Image (cartoon, rainbow, N blue to C red):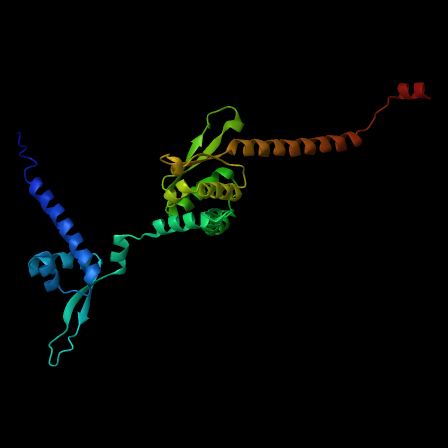
Length: 276
């Protein structure tokens, strides 16, 4: 077996980190299950020395995963309070929540009722909170490209990893130009996979916010790596240009008419004799 001298020192370090990580998870789990718990109790449960347990507890306390709780014994003449450890709010977040399974189960139960629109009602309620905030932010932006870019930034701020792609900008046909509004992350991907109405409601929201007829090209719920919405920027610009040209043409025609109305007819003396 070939031995790499350069990486020889990193192997024990990697093993130690992995061992520390697994031990720390066991310590945290015991704090969750049996806290408030002392370092000595943890050591007995895990067959570790008090010093080893305190090293892990100190590291987790520094990261805010566990908190120290001073507990006073009820025995008469007891000494100073002992240090016990409990899980913190941040530690609860690290362990994760099961809201996803709860929502999935709730929707499955509600959908068993004949004619139930629970998923659609939930999707509308979920996206309405975004639409209200986003609409206020977009009010002052008129250009469709700028509105789409601004919307992608708002999506990013809410964890959707929004960004845009410009399509057909070198195309001589203005109507073919578009912007793709993309989302690299979908917080409700698994729910949307079971209930596509979430994607439909989000698409409808985007159309209302941009005030244009958009089309969904791909969704993560359907297996794509990114959600992509087609925004037809070119058609809007073409319509605006045509409207501007129509206004200009009408203005020029009106001005020409006024000039024609004021034009004088000059008649020479000979022409005047002939007319008389």
